[in-house]
Length: 360
Picture 1 (cartoon, one colour):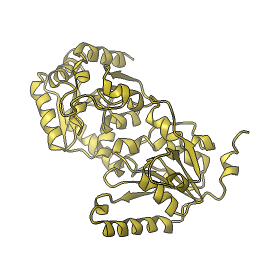
Picture 2 (picture 1 turned 180 degrees about the vertical axis):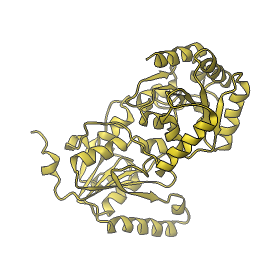
Picture 3 (picture 1 turned 135 degrees about the vertical axis):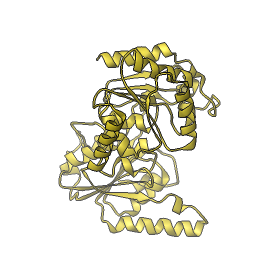
């Protein structure tokens, strides 16, 4: 028997809570679900619960009524105090009167929060692991996908699509303010580059094991600027280790690329990359932000599964070599050093990938 349409299966949906208590990139990859919920329940008000520090990627989303921050650091400490704070937070969710919760985290805490919220409809994957009785916290569990190469966007949508909650446009969305846009416009004027003429290179991640060889990244930047006559703006996050690593790359460059190092907020970075013609970087949140802005992307992948995390719904070239870590989802390499699979990516491969996207 075919499932009932959402309008029949779910009634009285006025307030929906989406939950994703993970990293910045993980939160961004949930945004197609926001649109699916809006298109299915156009009159409903949608809120999202995310970890404190990850809200930038959804704080300007026009379809969200509220971004609720989970204060993870505040929840640490002695058991009694922590339990009291957890209950206080859960009570705040319950008082909001949600009719539906959608848990995209698949962890113990969101399961408990979904149940405590009092929502009549509680959707999630049925993982069959976690605390005893966890699966009974949900009213609409769905089997966890068996395809190990399923992209994270499709995996997120898989929680709601079996119940007829779909979207005609499953793309990622990250929005930014007019102030962000004006700030970047002024920055580009200062740097002497115009919209659609430059590439953004982001050589680092806060997980340095994802980085490519410094000398090859420097050579790729030089090749872009000289052979392809494409100005490059090099960016990185504010973390001290990232700054140290990117400065090593810049010291090896001969073509004097433009730089914006550790100074941009995530929304400003989104406004910057939206004006570019190409993103070149490692598996990181900026890679997903570039995809959310529709920018063609060249992405370097090592021990993390590229099938699950590659740039979504944009022209892209993934540079990857076989690694046992990504093959069976277990750590085999020394993750404190540059991976052998990353070192196997040659400069020539990267140049060819960049050239293919630029020619398109």
